[in-house]
Image 1 (tube, rainbow, N blue to C red):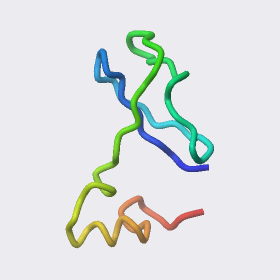
Image 2: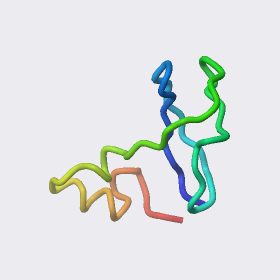
Image 3: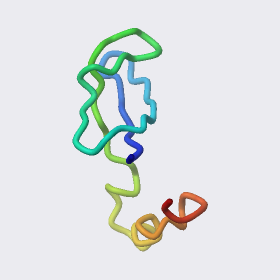
Image 4: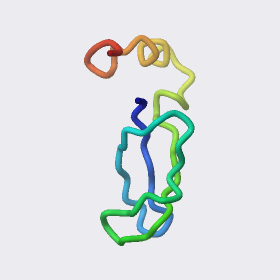
Length: 67
């Protein structure tokens, strides 16, 4: 299962959640303000266009490879 990062649109709190492919954050609850419905955000690796983006894809920035 992939690890997704979500952000609360009300308070801006972020959290990482393991979910099945294609799942969304509509039923997720913010741990800070209890709002239902979080928005998935792109990680800095997915959004960057630098030499480090290839390192991110290989798993070297996360401290290891993919399991």
